[in-house]
Length: 136
Image (tube, rainbow, N blue to C red):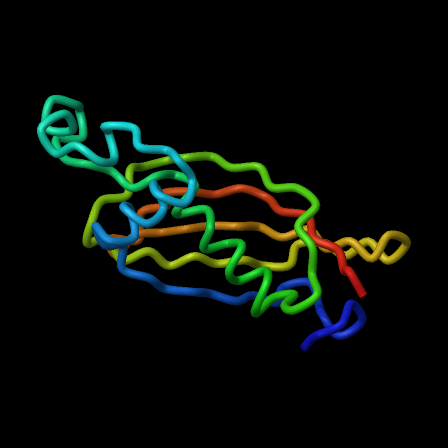
């Protein structure tokens, strides 16, 4: 597990996941967000997307998975995350989430990360900035 001193500006980690209908259903059950845009095909067909879309926060949760297990990793704590939702994510989309160390603040042991999620067409679907520190 990396520690603050071993992490360098420019370090990055990725996670790739194919979004499934089961993922959307599970996220809706856990979060309580059963918005018809995600859960009802007939409703979603009437929208500009023409099909159900994944919850934006489901996509954002991939950043949490990377931060909690890969970079910085176990023992790290999210402090903040801003998100810019760029494009919808559909069932079957292959999402590559990436975090990259942009800044280290030694006085507070804070790491600032650029967060980006792209689909199989290399279109950015979500981006933002996260701040992370340690529980240790």
